[in-house]
Length: 506
Image (cartoon, rainbow, N blue to C red; front, side, top):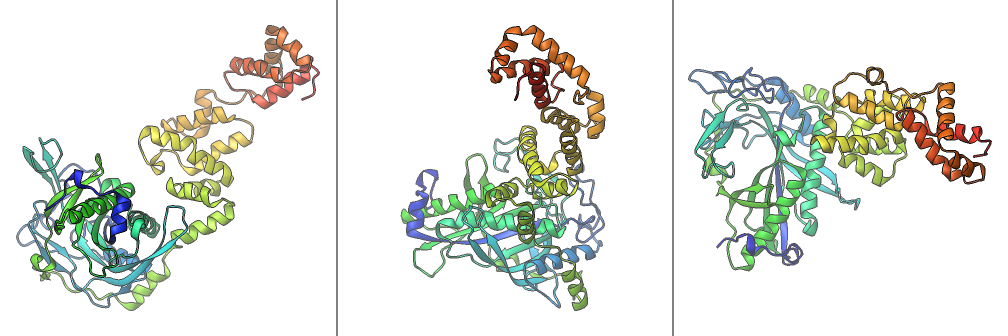
């Protein structure tokens, strides 16, 4: 018996009855120029089937050659995850019906991975400050599959589609799959643990420079394994594997849903089926895919067309010595340098803005100014455009230039936003936008005095109120001057000029 959506058990009730066990498999596409076993380009977004060759199309007689840079990246990942690096390993053939893999098997690693036995200490991103150690079973190299596009159906899945299109550009792109050991003892925090782990892993991989970790483009995706066992029972239950979850939020939602769904199956006296499932972003639910095979079903055997790998110890140590500062260590250092609170730093991390603020500060802005711009105005623009903050077409250097103009008095904050808008619109550097749009602050004292005199002459009753001590009335005059100068005057300077003209102390 399986459960439908209506059979879901309330999450808190499910956690009272059952202990969840997680297993997270994260696939990361490596940022190499060429594919894993041939020289084809890995550039994302090229026209379908334009980045293929006899090797990645598995034409007879085409022989694979291992990408050295991909091996280096795999070693970097393994070392950063505190893994042991194999002194000898090899590839294997994983046999399975792959409609989007021309050779109908995947070249992967099975019982002899390049990295194994590591861990990652993950701080939960729920604000609790709790840290949990996630044990890493292995990190192994393999190749990606192509992409299937199912046309004519209502869901984009093969069921109900009129026909399918295959794009082999991605077939053969280098992958590293990072597999955790069973994660136990998380209880109600299981979904948060899953999300926090993938976030920490994404940040780590980005800092290593081995991938662009774009979850929206499939460069980083998570297979979330979930099983339930009666509370206190040491025997694991049957697991399901929700495939290719492609956002941090979705990882959390998929785990939470599976816990409630499996609890519903078990409460109804049913049996959880070992299967793959697919996550539906629109409903936050998972649906059945196919019965999950075991390792034996894949009929692994050593790849006869590739020689084994034996990374030299000296080379491995050279890679270890080149590893960058870990992201969480860097964040702690920057937080201390910038004087930010824990909440302010968490907001930056959530917005993926730490690097942007760091670059803006390095270009001359203060940390507070940089944080304010990236998390407020530019955050709004990113939401409006529907892109990540890091993809806005403005650099930290350009923003620092705008901030410098504000501090130097040549721009007001309002005008600065217009300059930023111009940069985002592709109108050039900040200086060019200021000149083209005529946005410089009116700083000529005689011009400002003339504007103030005109505004006072137009509002004699307001001028009388100010002279009588009602200083708050000065806002009406300042507003008139700002309108007359099209917002190009410094409001504080205008206010002081109005008061001094009327002989009133501020």
